[in-house]
Image (cartoon, rainbow, N blue to C red; front, side, top):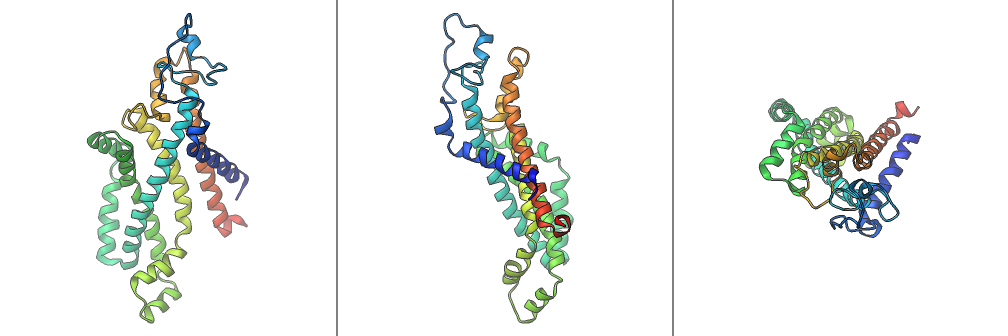
Length: 274
């Protein structure tokens, strides 16, 4: 893996560790509101200090603690959305590519195009608005709109691998379709899925931040980077750091996953490795 890929892997590992040990790392409870000190102005309250390294928001909550706990939401959404989307996509894509014919026409010719005809973010907004804002509904909505990319990728790989001689030999000796797909086709078609999964996690984190920014993500008082960006909008002039720090967290996470995806693509492709 190239240097940028290794750098992205280190950043992702740090964010996962922060998310895992957030209650131990965060200096304060991210949901607790505190009163301003006597004689302390609003501008002074927002500014970083020894007690609050990144300052406090308009409700007196510690910004650093909220960013640390916000990593838990982003990492959880990224992992679960990619896992659910990949499982659904691999199942449908493998069936479509292996059997072909009317089955492939039904999935790739109709179902894929139906889901791809809708703007993904708008469809997620509509689903979460209908189901109600919650972490479970957010993950469900992003998984439903995200499986198509994995299905199209696996379908293309299966269409190629199913014509190989070892697959033809497996059919000739009477091996079942399920065993052929699981033991012969998918292991030889899974490499592009690994790259797609790393890039998909970046998209899931960014989509979660976008929906939370619009008020359709995790409901308060649970901290989320997107909701922190939304809450900081009125204070852009007085305390721009309230918006800058959560924005940096989102940017670093998305950038790290993209670096890892590019590094994996180069590492898994022998032509690019040479």
